[in-house]
Structure formats: C-alpha cells, structure tokens
Image (cartoon, rainbow, N blue to C red; front, side, top):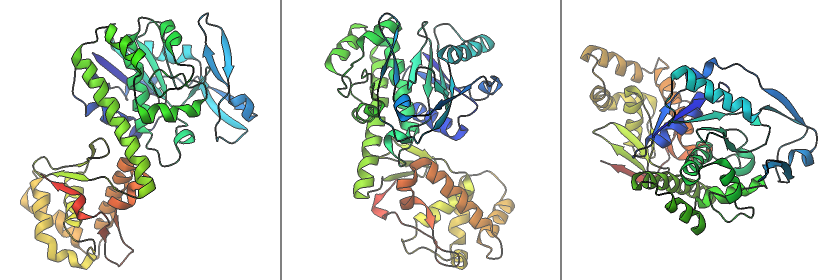
Length: 380
C-alpha cells in the first residue's frame, strides 16, 4: 500500500520531514511517500474565521448519522479574539484529488494532506466519502499538550489512526457511528472536548470492541504489525517526554560507528542527521568528559577530528586537511557556525525540554561541552 503524504505550503518543510521520518523508520507493506514539492502549486483559497468568544470556538462540529450537524463544547487555552485560517472539507479533499489527477495516482493508493489550516468542521482530521483522501490539521497541538510537545508525534498519530480506520471500516458513516462519545483512551474516541485528545494519544490503545472490528476485517498480519509498531513507538515517545520533563531524564543515544549515524533510542530511535563535518565535531565533544574543551585546545585533537571527518567523506586528503584546519583556527568562526548548525538539528530532533542534555554549550571563550552523562551513550 502506498500512502502519499502531501505538504500544504504553510506547513514547515522541517515539520513535514520529521513526520515522514517517523513512518520511514517502520518496516512493513505500507510505504509513506514524500510529495512536498508538488503541493506547492496549489492555490491559496483559505478564509479567515474570527472567533470572537471562547464559547463560540469551543464547539466541535459533529457529523451525525443523518449528516446533520450539532455542537459539542471543549476547552482551549487560545486567546480571543482568535483569527484562524480555514478551508472547507470539500476544498481540502479537492486538493487531494487534484494531486491524484496530476500525478496519476493509482485508485487504490491513499492520499493524506497535512495542513496548518483549520477546517469548517473544526476536526483534527477527516476522510472523504471515497475513503481514499484524508486531511490532518497540523497546527494548534501546543494548546493541548503544552510547549514541550514535539508536534511530529501527534501529527503522525492522527495519520496512522486514520489509515487504520480505512482498513477497519468500509465507509466513513460507519466510522462516525462507531466513534466512542465518552473517551476511553481508544483510537476511536470522538474527543468532542478536544482536550481529551491527550488521553487518546498517550494511551495509543485500541479497545476490545474496536480490536474485534479490526480482526473482523482480516487485515493482513504484516499491516497489523506495522500499525501497532508505529502506534507503540508514538506512545512510548510521548510517555517518555512527559516523564523526562517531570524527573529530568534524557534519552540514551546510540552511535553506529559503521553507518556514521546517531539515534535517540528512547525517542522512537529518531535519527540525528549530521553531515560529515558536523558528525566529526559532535563526536569529538561527545568523546570528551563533561568538562569539555576550549577552542584553543582543539589543536591537540586535530588528528581525531581529521580521522572522523575523512571516514565519512570521499574528498581528497588535501581538502580534508583544509576543512579541519579551518575548524581549529582560533581566528576564524567556522567552528561556531558548525556548532550552531548541530544545535539547531538537535533542537529539531528532541525539542526544547530535552535540548540542554545534548547541545554543545559554553560561553564564548569558555570551554565547550555536552552535558549528557556518558553512560547514556551506546556505541556500536
């Protein structure tokens, strides 16, 4: 099964790629495909919706069995008046169809649009009557989980549960009928009070009745395994993040010296993607004690820096020497530039709450160091 993930122009490329990375780390018959370039051609046809009062904003539209609408209140910390960019469900699904037509997507494939825009029903996500087009709202997650949330995980959660519903139900009316009006921590919780989404995601569970529906559809074992591997990974990461904030613990990191890759093992094995120069610098500081190094001390580590850099690139010996000499040159700013890039990638990978454990820190002129306890490092 091919699942095409589309990026709406207003969604940051970085967020989109982070979500895609979660799915690409899973193994199975579902293949999540990148489509970020094509979506940029869509026209901007959104509207401004102004929520003057909290009471008005606290209404989630519910599509009932007879397709009429009713309102359900929920609580939010958004300040009012609040202006939200919105599109209708029809507009969002039309964008999916336009992509299908342009790229000649197979009818059996699924298309999922990721967008920061709100929608006229005020849902987290939705499915078209064809059951082949989906949208996921990627904004406002910090209103429900707080500033420490890494939004790639709730977005990925919404994607995977809507895909699961495609396999569980033959039409979207059956989805609405089967939704739990009272939340029980199941993927089929309706979450009329949108703050209830936190229970749903942190449990990442499937109740017995819904599991029976899933089993009754004879979903192939390999699909089932991949679904739950992704769900379990998201649940594990979100639970770890909540606890780490409370008791100030960091994730272990795993360094694969052969592949030249670094992974955060307790954060869904998320990879810290570094280029050869960044890899050499970061590994150098990880290999030091937490006391760190001053910039003028780097010359004593030149051979180590050069060795790691050359292992990870095929440039000439002459160019390798030039790169390393610029890094250790105290009259140049190259090392600070590289450290800044590394730290930005770390923040994107682990978020604000865990950033301090892994970043290269230290005041100008003082020693640069990494705070992480070295027993938290696994080297392969």
